[in-house]
Image 1 (spheres, rainbow over the protein chains, first blue to last red):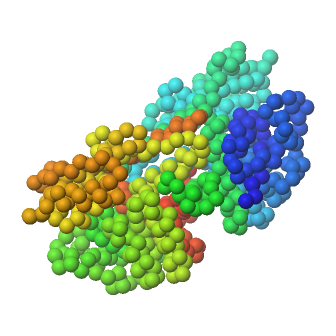
Image 2: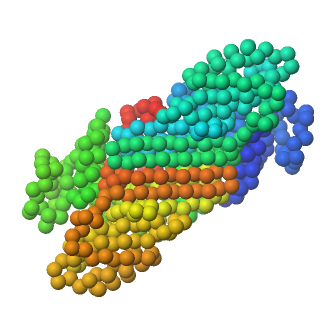
Image 3: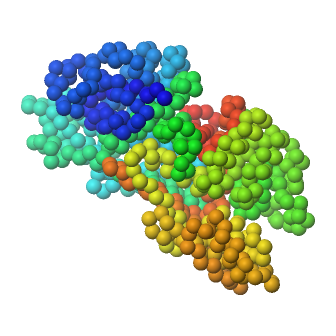
Length: 303
Length: 303
């Protein structure tokens, strides 16, 4: 069986974790890593040894699926570019309220170019969305809440990436903390660049849709190092007349999200091979297509 | 939009709960209830008022999907009969080790007759199977256990139905209790018919594949009534290098299973309308197809 040729686009926490996840999958091969041209100059990361590194995906041959390990807001444009090149994509686009519209938009270019994309295929949105949908199947008239981070808080990747993208921010970590009954508060540690204006940065954070709906505390620190964490957790609860369901997951986020994105590359190719071209959310493809295995009996083991 | 016409086959706990679940679904209508001819005579159940009751499904017109609320071991034969009649089916077939083979067998008749069946679409197998598959997506190299009933135990429907089918048993309830690390023990309360031989019944229970792999205690009682329960619970845990996941569900079993079967009738019709004929397990159809809603945007609400 031909292996799925996967390109990693972006070499941050998720990109690196995707590399490790792909190495666990006997049905995949890493075609190479796509980085910004500006990052290519100082390319001394030992993890990149023996890996083809390019600044443009067209320099890699025979890529089946590109894993977009880039900031969420760069995803829509990049997917369109890759569709034009005839490349399937997987991303972790995380602005919940825009997902349905984005799916509709990207479905057109996917169908025209006969490729497959799975969008918002990470932890949340992604596997959490599947659990929420499943819980609805189990108790249609119930009530769901999702609580992130617990009392100690956990690192939100989307929020952290957003703060890091603000001019004047040298480094940052944005924590999500439970605030009761599915509500949250945010705590942001920021390390400023020399001469940066803290008030201006605070304003940029507080006015961003990632933060403006929740109580947010911003704490300037000398160094992010002691405050940094990769840990996060989520608890989804659904109560219904006759059924109570609780799903809790905790882990280090890049590994978690990377595993889901890599499994989604497999689901992408399953759809592609059936010529079911288009753009899908994580819950629109059968879960069995995300699992490794050579035949249905193998995939049904432990059913 | 035309409503899905659903027949309930069997009028036990699950059949009755399916009736209640269908009444919650604005996209479905109950075509009628199929019962054994021998049960038709004393049909004074007030829940059956205004419902068409027949002993043969051909007496009902325009049935899209039949929900097979019958003992697991009667399922394979019944599915084949209904395929021959061109009727789609949903069942909760629960002998895990035979599911892959049954799926293969029933896939042939479904494709020949251009119908859709979803087999083993209950709690476990069913939604638990989906959670196990999802957890594997999240941590491919982890270790999973499923624990039923907890310390107090819970009613296993498959085991209870099996004991009730033994000659000489008037009534029974079979509890599953946790026995550590995904292992279980069984406790069976049996109410005997007059003149029945307890030792013979014990032998029939202990030699059945439902019981013979686990420690089983059999307790004869005057009346099942004080020992009866509809409650059950399951906890699925997966530990991996970087991720821990726990899914716990507890509830009254007939409601739970009925909701899943009724949602599966919807998934059946979605597959049928796409002409994707065949027999599927619960995890082979996209979860979004189990959800009610008129369009994709509606189904993606809360994603």
